[in-house]
Length: 171
Image (cartoon, rainbow, N blue to C red; front, side):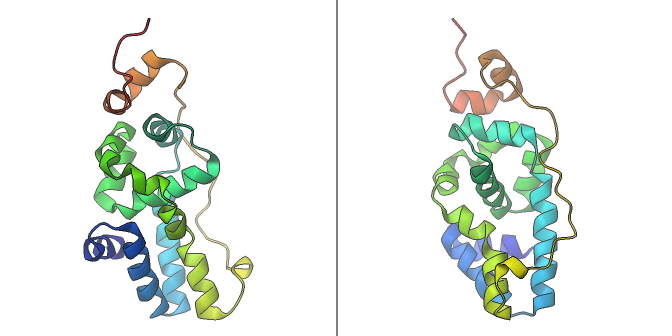
């Protein structure tokens, strides 16, 4: 709910959304920050899948592991409905195509690092001493798509393939 509220107040501008979240978190307690972190980690873990990573590659080109972290933050920034839609059908990432420049802008990285920077500001303790998250991360889940096979890409991500100009026939 906090993510959606900040998104609405920011007019969908990720830099402003991040600033609003920062202000809210700095006005709270360390306990509230850790609660936010735990919920953030739960939601981000839901989008930590091979199908969503592959969909991101179709939309944005090569996506490194660091960049995929930013993309997950960008997806989460769009709120629960977007996360639910994309988790259920990674091809639904196409619904964010109009905002893809934001994913590539670096603003998503700032959002992804928000909890650690607020921790340092609230506690005066280096982010390296941040308590570990209780949410386990075992790496991406799910099955990969052979992104070199355009037929497989078109079959798995038809709307994203069309948006990326891969909708035509092979040959």
